[in-house]
Length: 68
Image (tube, rainbow, N blue to C red; front, side, top):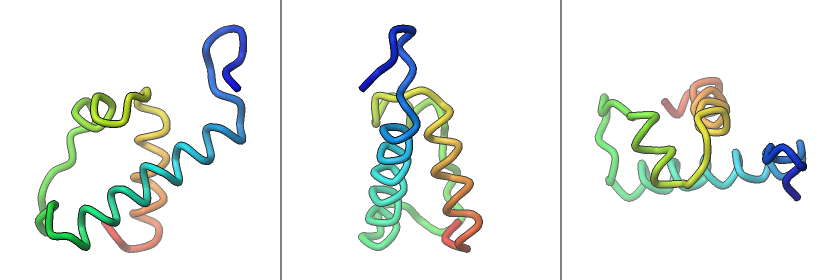
């Protein structure tokens, strides 16, 4: 549940990050994202309806896993 100031609680943020991460992996597997294609944070925030923080967290996790 969102906090009074509009921020997501830690558990919600984590599930949002995992959802974004999974969607990007699916896009890569389906060929919707080409090797070397730049990912635009602003476009991703619009697509997923979130701020840049969960986008950056998801991208960082994918980099750490060697996916990006």
